[in-house]
Length: 484
Image: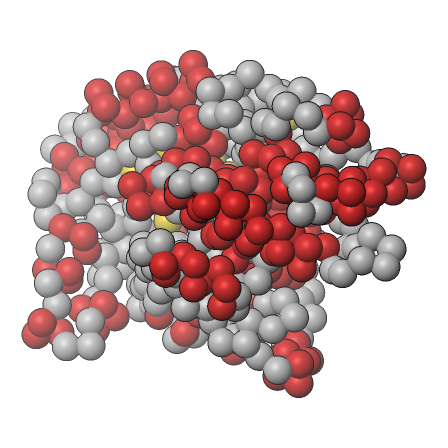
């Protein structure tokens, strides 16, 4: 992944493509904003194909530059040549071998891993990485064409609801050309948290929750979409799990009926060890493209958050690698869902995403001074809208009155500093039966992680709901005078 992007933007001589590529905006990440490349004419494309032929086996950097320029133009192959992905795979293997012989082992590893992005079943790249003591993930099983076609035929066509899309205008989120302040919640249904959301959810039972949240002024739901629950084996593209997609379809339509806008958070698994998206992302990008394409006409979806807490992955995969994957993931969304927005909910280094996203998302679970400092840093770093995508205070470590006061201060800081809005963590405390198979051995249910809800397990509102209704304009400060 590292070379696949850097060759396009940093190599000193990119002949034809470099002359017409737009200048990047000012930023400190070293990445370009995701914008379409200019279309090349036939003469330019022929020159790139000739460069591949002339330099094959002699100058692998030039070959890779030319191949990636062709890839950016969605050229599948040059006349009479093998498929472009096969050429890219072969060129990276050869380049990695050259680097390995020169003793440039880190660079060789990057080249072999880039080869895997074009053929993640490659025994050659896997063998060479293993020799260099680099573990490679096991890819998802390969589907036969008949399995792919059967799954796609069984999945009904999604019918979008009517409405207008949330947009970015003059540095703020808007709907119908009016400001759209996000008053949101990171949402799982009370009885279907975590992995139960897509696997077990009964959408017909959720009207009470939809009404309860809307009655308090909440207008946005941030949802966590687990790819492993939506897709099975990998074939000629992504292969859907039909039942779980139908649950997601029904939920999106229900939320739209209640007037919610949705942020779909992709790639939410905290542990990527089974199949690291940064080492072999081909299947992952196909899945992102499938989701974005399926819901591209759904105006209830305001944005895709392509990776939750992605900066936490810097430790294992390096900051550069994560951001380069982020570039590809955002491109996959934009190519398939051009009317919807894109963001990335980083924890501590959200400014890294600013050159790539439509609005910057950050998360903060510290005290009010820490929150104000992070807001100041982000406002100074970008002129894009900034959303507080996760903030929460639990009633295990504090009482309900202090929870309410903490939310009030946070909401005031967001409003006073021009944020696009906030998304609290979470709507509900969850019953032990929804969290654990064995309620007698359910540490999460009895600890702080299950006490962040605005409502308790009986749907009774905590005092923090007052802070939400004050921020959303349903009540005034005078309504809270004298309460303790």
